[in-house]
Amino acid sequence: MLMPAQENKTNMRNKTLKYALTLAALSLFICAYGAFAATDAPPVSPLPLAKNAKTKPDEMPDGRRERELLAVYVQANALIGAHDYDGLEKLAQGWLDQYRAKKISGDQYLERMSKLAPRNAGTGMLNDLLAWTQARPGSYIAWYTLGAQYVDIAWDQRGTAYANKTTAEQFEAMYKYSALGQAALQRSLKLSPDPLPSYAALMNVAPIAGKPRSGDGTGFVAGAIKEMFAKPQRFCPGKYAADGIYPSTWEEQLYYLCLALHSDPNVTKPFEFFVFYNSPRWGGNYARVEKMLGEIEADKRTSTTAFNEMWALLLQMKASDAHIANDPHRAAELFVQGFHLAPLPEHISWLYTAAGDERDKLKSGARSREIYAEILKQRPNDGNAMQNIGFIYDEAGDLQHYMEYMIPAANLGMKEAQNNLGYYYMVGQRGLPRDLQQAKEWLTLAANQGYEHAREKIAVVEAMIEKEKKK
Image (tube, rainbow, N blue to C red; front, side, top):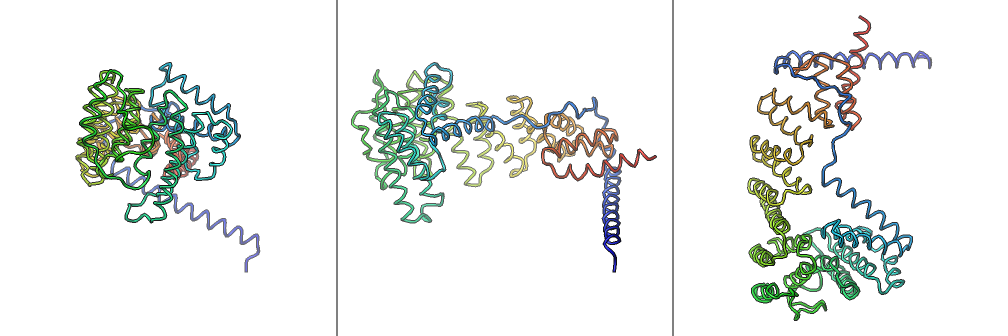
């Protein structure tokens, strides 16, 4: 039987031996792999220096936008919890002032306003919102926020399952809260001369408010809407008074879309709701959406940019349908067409989806590379697009072009590219010299971003550096 001190020494020897064997195995693998692929590319010039590389890639437009809106959401929720009604009114009034001064667009104004409601909080903050409306019964912001919260709860009660898997109890709860949401939002309409956010929220609740209704509203499009846009004042038809009673969901949404476009003919967020809820998956059809687009185009106040974005949103929805129908080629082409119509930073994700489908589902590396190249035209420092182009060249066996894209991708903060460069420096491969210090620096950059494979290689590189020092 070993004494404690002897046992500790034995354990240490065993651990040391295990580590040495692991290190030896990794070294053999590195040597073997290096010998196999050391002659696969000409020297790369100039050589990259890890100290000049970014420690993480630039934020994607969607990510930056979501982070900014999250900050708004956190601020508003804190004010609601503290019952700071003055602070809430000041916050919302500031957005309205920016919108009226054309410092932000109507869509940006709607996005900020939508973050006032404590979404995903369930009924937990209803008492706070009800207290707000009781303290400020004449506040448009208070009634709008309460209505938007009721709508969010209604959707939560509905759940995400298909209708045939949704229980009667879920539907009843949905109807209850959607009716409360409609009532609060209808009240808000009377408290502001220009309640654009309420129009958008009412469009969002229309598909789930009350029992299913009949009628497809085609006559409404052909007659009343056309008449509305022909009138100089461009009001929506008066027979559809804002009392929450309409012949069909289609006409109800159309009514609020008209009011939103009357308020701001270049706002696109309400039209996005309109397209989604009138898609075939909701029992609608795109023909009537396209007809509505024709009516919108006839309104000369609508800018070409806004009109193109509305068409792009329709193409994006059709692309989503193609995804569901397992038609990746049509989906990719529709995403690209949509982006060409409205090449906005927040639509870059459409190109990423299209490029991914072409590469992964259709095995079309060349077309995927073309789409990633389009992303680089919009975002020249998009390391993710560069890295993906490099991988496509690698899959095709074009190792020179692979490195031409991998090096700038690594410099732009892409962790997988940084890991790969570290490995190539470790073994002297792909046109890079064997440089253990550079290898360690690149691998450290990748490891600091959570890339585990790089962390594993660092131990090997450090051991190799120590070994060379002893020579």
